[in-house]
Structures are given as structure tokens and as C-alpha cells.
Image (tube, rainbow, N blue to C red):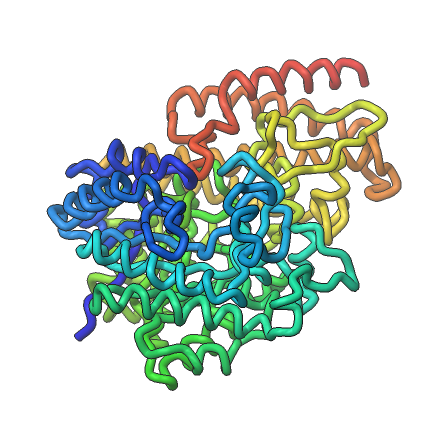
Length: 589
């Protein structure tokens, strides 16, 4: 029987150049034991091969590899002492700044250029250039670098491999060959051709294949038992889903890992929304994920799932989002496919001692569960110390029903202030000229003011309607939750989970009022019956909401924090500044 693969991220880690240093600080015996006890078998850390490996192909790369490998051995030993394996996360061959001396010294390796907005925050540059894999030297270096790393750090559990991501790697890594729309994020315009004469006439799937095959060969030549996991994130922009020929052509030593939700659809009130991001609202596995799992199995490969357990960007500034019934349904559906291996967190949603993780681990330890209500009631009894879990289970169902109208999409989740709505002052100025940025990638802390981008593809009227419905239903469920948890004997768990539920209610209210104000102030025809009196009433309610959330934030320091950035986006001070601004606005009406 195969060893289970259940991967987690150590709290306190931050994606980027300081991964190993942060690992030395945060991978303590106590933290690692807690992750093990939560049911996980491994943790992951991102590395760049050119930092942690040395070869004779490009000897100038990896000058400090010995130091990095020593740290990795130390971290791997710590993990093994705690009963865990350390995995490295690879996005290779990682691109360089366009003016990097390495590319000037090796112009044959210089591949397609690509703007990488995410690299600004991680590495300090925006304009990148790929390492061209059509050049033999690149693949030779890639294989030997993998061999060197796994030879020098032999106890690594394996590697997760992402081949199409926010960061530039191979020449096609940011080129949208299938018209998915993702290429616009990287500056691609309709009609553009790939700016690499060597790769331009090649099939993108061939590039993905050669990268994966090369990495697998390099790792397994040094460590036969290491897990080599191919994450299929965003393959759809390069070759149509479910990538049957690509998956079938990969060697059996590669494990296929699709995303549970991507490729699905959410439906509400007759309207469908494409799910191209993590979601606790959508159950899955999506048709894309199911097909990739079945193709992998049919071609002799192991399959696992990429899934979020604590939360997604649907609600990202709290440690978890208590959609517990949906988590059960996700796991039950995956069980029917025979999938229990999972990478259960990314750079956020990494707190291991939450209700959501408790439920996830309970299911995996006892996968024979077939009755949803029985499972939820058992989790409620055990986690909160109550004799009868039925009322809590009913509330979890109510939370799941409450979020069904949620306006899922990149507009609200990424390019709007929704997740920091309690700290975003209502706009009241002209002209509004600053485009909305991804809420967690702003360089000066200001996201923008062109909120029209935030309500795409729904329009402001529908976003206001949906958020109002979510707020009303969620807030009613919070009252039920409080009543159900009044008898909890594990009071710390009860208070923490009530705080998380209350916080989302506050965020929803602020988002609803923000977009209501935006409609009335800038697009008055969008909601004709939203008059000045209605706006005043909503603003008055928002001032009370802000008073309450400021007090909540002072009681619970876990709230308002976004783990990927290691940064508070909602604080009592920011909330009070918004309240002062909103109160002045109300006074002026």
C-alpha cells in the first residue's frame, strides 16, 4: 500500500527568497508535531534550483548551493524527527530578469520575455525572460540540478512541480495559446505570437512534457522513492482540458495533481459562473479534475488532489471559513473516486489548529463515513465538547446555503476590496483614475478606485443584491451558531469559531454598503430604487457594523490577517479611520 501524501504549509512561511531562513525559524518541533497530529504527512517549501543546486552545465549558478543544501538537510531532519517529510516546490526552469548577466553570458538560453507582476513582490523585478527549453543546455542543467539537489539532500520526500504559474519559467509559461483570457494578465494581446523563435512552432504541451520528464528523471536518478507531483494548475491556457495525451505520455513515476474546483461551474438563480480558482462554495471535483484523475489512473499513474481546507480568496482575511458541510461533501466525492492524497493548502489558509482542519483530518482518519449529518454532529461534539451536535450541524448547513449567492469571480475576489471592506473608505471623489490592483499585490497599500472592475462580470446591481442576500442569511446563521455553542465545554474553540463567523458577517456588510454607495454615487441608474434615504440608512448601519468589528479585532488577533503576505489588511486602526471617513460622508448627505 502506498504511503499517504497529505501536504501542508508551515505557518509563518512566506513565498520568496527567505523561505529557508523562515523555515529555520518556524519549523520547530512543536509546530511540526501539531501538523503531524492534524493528519498530515509532509510540509512544503519553495526553492529555486539555481539557488540550491550546482552543476557543471552552468557553474555560475548555485554559488551558495552548499549553504542552502545544508539548511535543507537540517529542515528535512527536523521534519523526519516529527514524523513528516519535507517537499520542495519547484517552478522550473525559473526565469531571470530580462537584463540579468546570466542571459547576457548565455544568449542561446534567453527565451521569451514576459511581464510577471507577482515577481515584483517576491523578487523585486517585473520584466522577466524565460530559460528556453528548446536549447539543450537548459534541459541538461535542469536534470543535473535536480539530481544534485536530491543527492545532497537525500531525505527529501519529493517535489511538487508547477509548470504554468504567475512566475516566468519556460517560454510558454505566460502565453495563452487557448484563448482562456489569462494571458491578458501578462500583457498578451490578441494576435500576439510567442516571442521565441525556437519554441514558437512547437506545441505547448510538448514543452510541459519535456520539463516534467526532465525533472522526474533528474530526481529519480538520485532518489528512487521521492514523490514527483505534477500540479496541473493553468494547463488549460496552453492545451485544452483534460490534457489526455499529455498525461498519458508522462512516465509512471509522475503523480498527477489537478485542482478540485477549477473547470467547474457555480449556478445561482439561473446564472452560471465559471470556477477558475479555489472555492469552498463549489463542491467538486470538477469535470476537469475527474477526467485528469481517471486518465492518470488508466495510464498507470497515481493521482492526488489540490484542495483548500481552511479558506479560499472567497474569504481570506480570517484563519478559516466554517463551511464544514461543503468540506464533507468534497471529501466524500473524492473518496468515491478513490482519492485521499492531497495538497491541502497554498501560501495562505495554513493555520493547522482550526475547525476546518479538524474536520478534514477526522474524515481522513475514518473515511468510512457515509452519513453527512452523523459526521457533522460527531465533529461538533468532539470539537466543541457538547453532548448533542445537531444544532451546530444545522448551522453549518445554514452557512453553506448562505454563501450560494456569493458573486464568485476574479472581480470581487481579487480586484475588489471585499476581503478588506471593513478598512476601505467609501470613495467620494472625481476623477477616479487608478485601476484596481490585486488586493494583496499593491505596492503602496492603495488598491485603486475604479470599482467598475470589481463588479465584473455581474455589474454593480447584481453584486449588491447577492452580497445583501449572503449577509442576511449568514448573519441569521451566526445567531443560531451562538445559541448552539452556548453549551460548549471547550470554550476556546467555541469563541474562536464564533469570532470567525461574526467577522465574515462584518466583511459582508461592509462590502454590501461599499457597493451600494458606489452604485448610488457613481451609477445611479443601476439601482433606481436606491435613494438618498436608503443610502443614509445603510451608512448608519455601517457605522454600527464598524464599531462592532473594531471591537472584535481587538479581542481576536487572528482576524484581519492574510497569511500569504504575512500582513494585516484589516486592523482596529484602519477600521476606525474608515468609520471617521464614512461618518463625515454621512453627515454631508
